[in-house]
Image (cartoon, rainbow, N blue to C red; front, side):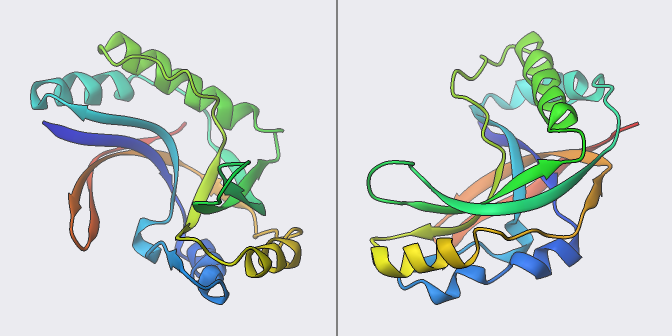
Length: 181
């Protein structure tokens, strides 16, 4: 079995812009800079024999490049005890290309035998995992970063990753990188 997900990699200058933002929040565990990405589809555990079919299916996607900006911050779940701190996204094309890429990935994976996700796609980059962080500190962080806007960057590819869970955290390995036209 192999654990897979599809993501957009974030350029180093944008990682530098957002890494460590959550340090001001007690009991927040920041995502390591090398793991900052925008997940397009979490595939989960699949038989290793499906990996080639998944690679081939994703290789047939034909989507144009597009510009992306990180914008605003928030938490998941939207109600209840916050567990994840995230930064949102914005595209110059009103998210059309980002959502189109996600739809094409879903279609390609469905053709390869992966079930479609029922959960609504909410594009974001996880900044930190929260473990009963004080609400006041979290509210101050959210208010202070509500207008966050990163520089624009061009999305030129997406990546199929495998992920191995270890006691020290996940280890992500590039399985295949796909260029956008």
